[in-house]
Image (tube, rainbow, N blue to C red; front, side, top):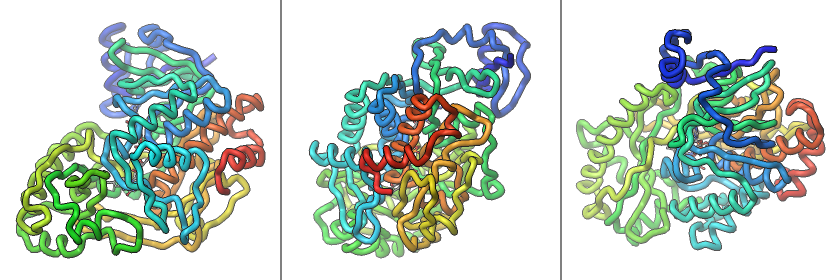
Length: 464
Ligand SMILES: Cc1cc2nc3c(=O)[nH]c(=O)nc-3n(C[C@H](O)[C@H](O)[C@H](O)COP(=O)(O)OP(=O)(O)OC[C@H]3O[C@@H](n4cnc5c(N)ncnc54)[C@H](O)[C@@H]3O)c2cc1C
């Protein structure tokens, strides 16, 4: 019987030093296989039906969906709050629930929006169904939904490894203030955005356009802004009626300033508080799965935040008294690792709205590919609302792993649409329900009756 533990190489190195100096093969960056004895250093903290890794839009919805199906579910999240890029990256709005004015994403994602709206933390902008939100109320609402469903929540817990037996993941290893711990489960959902669990387990990854990725952007909140001004009233909402979200007059003035770093937009997004806006302007194309690269890029982008704030003060009277009231916990990542699944969604089929027999979620946002340098952006309108097939969320040979969110199997261009939050939430619901179904059907995640899954999703409000 082949029983092995896979750890990120840094974590494996630390364990090797603590337990058995010299017993581990060196790897400068990557996953390492270590003797199963290392799992003894990570005592079992819980046994579950389903463990969800990552508490972003895909993950917290997946955990809620799985628990509502009666599965004993846990979710692990490295920050102290849920929401992923919405709350750790200040990425707004939640895009997009509607296509041509008709809502195409329902179910749990829409329930979340309605609950957030009822708390006073969301406003839906029609006809596209973009959702402006209050960052702090988003965290509260997501946490309530997960806990009410009976999910065990492991916050401040980073996934650093997994244990495998004969090709099946048997447990994940997390690191938190308790030290190392392991969580055993029958099914696992990777919603880490970066496919961390799939990568640790050895799932093949898409080759990412010869290393080219869409840029990361470090978003921040500016306060002291004249949000009642006609300019901000036009540009900080996303109804599709008030004009482009690109703030062209300001961009043109910024382009005239010598020595400003690369930038995108700028996009100013409502945070639902008078005087404050979330700003998306900085950019750096970087491999966010490499710690040193990402650290270097974030340090540079933090400097850039203050350069742009000063520039905005000088070019636009609406910003003359503005100041940085908060920077996101981390720079936002548009593109990183994605699995090579049973099916890879291509831009051609996505834009054409191809319907698959196993369509489990939808996408309504145009393809929105940010160039790795400069202000450029490739925008491709969808011919109709797109579909995501279940087969893009599973990989052959990994019988108990489902992937949800921006790390599913898709080419770069299709990713440039399906990565938006409403789509990721839809995939999360499908992943949670599919994992629970595979347990009740007693089969691998590859062998579930997809027609039954589609019916259950429709019953739960998905619009397929
Ligand atoms: C600058 C920028 C602008 C964007 N603009 C928009 C927009 O206007 N509208 C829109 O809808 N979308 C937008 N997006 C895209 C969208 O925010 C993301 O693609 C989406 O949040 C992806 O959801 P996810 O759940 O797949 O992953 P994420 O949101 O990345 O969530 C992953 C979660 O997993 C956790 N995690 C990761 N690794 C580990 C680990 N090893 N251990 C434990 N936890 C872990 C993370 O902390 C996080 O909570 C934008 C993105 C960026 C970067």
